[in-house]
Amino acid sequence: MACQLVADVGNTDTVFGLLNLSGREVLAHWRISTGVPRTEDEYRVLLCALLDSGPPEADTIRRAVIGSVVPSGDPTVRRVLSSVVEGPVIQVTARSDLPIKIDVEEPLTVGADRIVNTLAAGVRFGRDTIVVDLGTATTFDCITADGVFLGGVIAPGVSAGLDWLARSTAKLPRVELAPPGEVIGRRTEACIRSGVFYSAIGGVDAIVRRIRESWESDEILVVATGGFAPVIGPYVSSLDRVEPYLTLEGLGIAGAHLDR
Image (cartoon, rainbow, N blue to C red; front, side, top):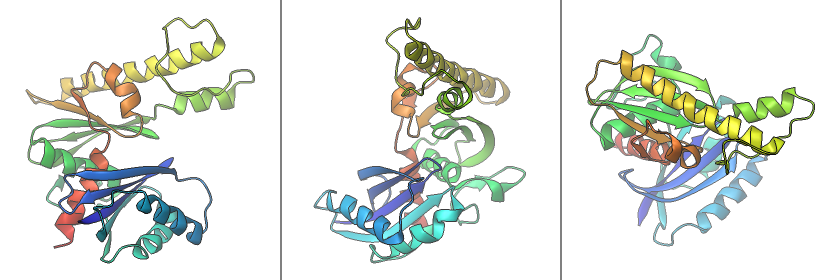
């Protein structure tokens, strides 16, 4: 079966996905660290190993699609992808000719992740939507029913509090973000985990509430995506659904549109 390979290059992680040619179905996905230094050969070997572990029916990769917020690594990613696909390597940017409108003051500064989230939300849901992308940063993207990106909010990411506490204090340890067993911690690690976890949940709920108050729309769908979406999404009362791979789907839909 012919498919396409997409790469969502973030500040913390890079997520690869194999999707069908329409971009509507994720066949496989892998997450690697963006910050680990790798030579181009190492990168290629790693990617080939990941692809070898993919579904056997995905035997032909017709195109590759990149969405990146790390410009310094883009040339390497493009060269590596060019070596493993038979067709074009497409990079999605604010200049890409996509069936959406970026209605903000500086459209060329909008990141590729927010662009493809807008595209995927417009195609998938067809209604006014807030996409909450829970990654290195937490972004709130406001997308109209007809695929217009109105702008949004950018906040510190879910793990920012964990990183700041470990870096800025002498005795507080770095802990993993996970749902705490109880709100009132009885050990230092449990106190930190509870504080950061519930601060993140409360922050998402508060920002979504304020967006709802300022956006003149009667029915707004709130969707979470990104690496932390499966961890905190089920605990956020303002969310309607969790779609962890919405960004990958947006890249796939963009690839299908641009490679015509």
